Structure formats: structure tokens, C-alpha cells
Image (cartoon, each protein chain N blue to C red):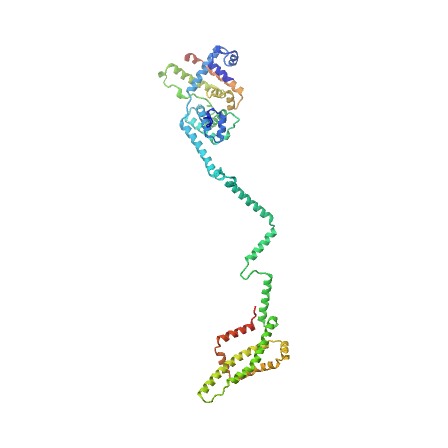
Length: 311
Length: 195
């Protein structure tokens, strides 16, 4: 309204005004004189203002546009680095890294939530116990109730061996019975052969001859070896025999082997008496002699069979 | 040509700001070209005819728009919003300088003639009129002076002045009439010499 009034005053003369315009202009100029004065003032003031206006330097515009460019680069940096990488255009949805990372995170969270819900606490405790058993595992195998029983039996057997109660062990008893009976039979059968050996060794040779003396010496040496071996074997048999129970001995005595047993019992006694009668030097010589290796092995096996339990 | 390229000169200020908020750089350039001179003159007159200070304030004003374009409310007139922001910047500067009084417009000294004898009589009268106009503007009340300068120097309409200053349009109209009548009557003496 006012702008129109000013435009009217600036552009039109008072005589050119319409009735409507005169009513509107009447706020500022009631008559032609005031209208002309107002018209001159507005035109002069406007020209004075227009001539006094300053213009901005191009440098200021460059500064503002540089600031605008910097702000755009900052935005572009984020768009190019993160946004473009995470959500590349033209790629299928499942190939976008942001979607892939989101799916992976969702799967991980879902798995953890499901795992925590499905496994109760007591199951977790049992699992821990199993892990401890695995941790204590050793080359001998896992420790179970059966192994504990076996180990306790072994300990008992070892204690019995240490205490000398082998005769009470049924395993050892059976083994002793077999060995004793077998050895006994062998001993009974070997007894006459011993006498035969002794008889066979006593070959008649002319006395006082060097050949005869040499043979006699060799024979005596050989006899001493044989006798010493036999004596040691018989002593071992005697030791074994003493371990028999009385009932077993009675059974043996009631059988056909009574005579043989009596003979057997008498044979080592006689042999030992004879050996001891020949002098202690004989026995010492026989013990000091080097036993062949094969004999050693056989005897070791026999002793092992006698005194050690085969597991 | 218009099928492939926007003619930014045909768009309103508000539309250009919408484009700029969406990231259209050229829209801002168009706005800057439209209001660069308006703003520098506004600051120049409001800030004691200090050209350097006026350029600094104009630069700050547009950088604020760049940094935070969403501060503009598209429902408002961009021109009045811009002038209101500039007016608030000047008020803050007055508080800084502890100068309450000089919310006054000054016609720049560049237009004034120093050596009156070398100029024709007509130019001398114009320069005298400018000096006297400045004096009469300084005599006016601040609220009347602001309305008059916004209307006749900045070229704002009554509605725009009302929005810029945050006052009623009727108040603007009455203030403007009073200021115009006062100045016209006080400067009527120059009419006889200049006409």
C-alpha cells in the first residue's frame, strides 16, 4: 500500500492522479504543494542513497565460495570413504558391506542368545567335569572304577608278596601245585639217572698212568660240575616243597608216587651229604665256576615261573 | 536449454534455499549474488561506515548460512530472515562496542565532495543535502530511523520491515509516515536551491 503510494508520488504528477490515488496519497500529501514537496524529497533522497552505495569486492566472494567448497569437501570425504564403501551403488543388496556386516552381527547375537538359553547351568557343570577328566588323562588311560579295582588288587598282591603269604593266594597255590608236581616227577625220574651218570662216569682206567690220571681229573671236574648243578636244582626243589600245604602233601603221599617221593626226598639228602662229605672246597669250586649262558637263561626262566606272577 | 539446466535467476529466494539445503551449490551462488550488495551496504551503514568491518560481517553472515542452512525456516521470507539475522549481528556488535546510540545510518563519505570550489553548484547542493540528511536522520528516533532506512535505502516493503523488526505492519506504516514527513519538512529548504 505504502509502496504503491510512494511509487505513485515518484512517478506521477499531482494532476495525473485518479480519485482513488488521491485518497491514498492524502496520507502523505493533502494538496498539490505538499505532494510536490514530498515528491522532490523522495526522489532526492533515493538518488542520494543510490549514489552512496558501496559494492562488495570480488575477494570477499572468493572467500565465501572457498568456505562453501571446503564444507562440500568435508561432506564428500565422509560420503566417499564410509558411505560409498558401506553402501555402494549398483551392487545387489546382499553384496553391500553394510548389509553383510549387519547380517553377521545379527547371526552372532542370535547364536549367543540361543546358546545361553538352551544350555542350563547343571549341564554346564557336567561339561566342566568332563573337561577336567580329559585334562587329567595320561598314557595309561582314563581312570575308571575298573582300573581302581585292579590297582587295589595289585596293591593287595604286592602286600601279600611282601608279607610272604604267597601260599594263601589261590593263583600262586595252583601254580605251585603244578610246578611242584611236575618238578617232583622230573626229580623222581631224574634220580636213577643220576646214579647212572655216576655209574657211567666211573670208567675203569689203569691206575698210576698219566692218561688215566688226566681222564680221572677231567671226569672228576665234570662230575663236580654236574653235581653242583644238580645240588642247586634240588635245593630249589626242596624250598618249593616246603611251601606245600599239608593237605596237598597228604594227597601226594596217598598216591602212587609215595615211593618216588620218598626216593626223591632221600636223593638230594644223599647227594648233599656226599657233596658236603667230599669237602667244602668242592662246593665252593662249583659255585665259583662260570655257568654257560644258555643255562643261565633257562634257569632264569624257571625262577621267573616260580617266583613271579604272570600277568 | 531449460530442459537440461536450471535457470536459477527465475527461482524465488525460498526455492533457492531449499535447493541449497539439498546440496545445490549453484543455488547458494545465486542467493549470494542477489544479496551480497544489500548486505554489505546494510552493514556499512549500520557499522559506522566501516567498509572492512562491513565486509567481515557480510562474510560471516553468508558463512553462517553455509554452515547451517537448516537454520532458515522455509515458511518465512528469506529476505526478511536475512535482514533480521544481519540486524541481530549489528545489535551484538553494538553491545560489544558498548555503543547503544549509533544505530544510525550514515551516507558514505565517498559520495561527499571535499573541495566544494572544484565542483559545480549542483553537486555542491547534493552534497549539502546528504550531509543535512544524515544529520536529520541522526536526530530521528531509532525506531523511526530504522523503518525509514529499511524502506527507502534497503528497499523492503512494509510487510518485510515488520517481519525483520518483529513489529506490526500498521506500526511500521505509521512510523514510516512520521519519519518521511519530518525529514521532508526539515529538508525542504534545499528544494529551492536544488530544483
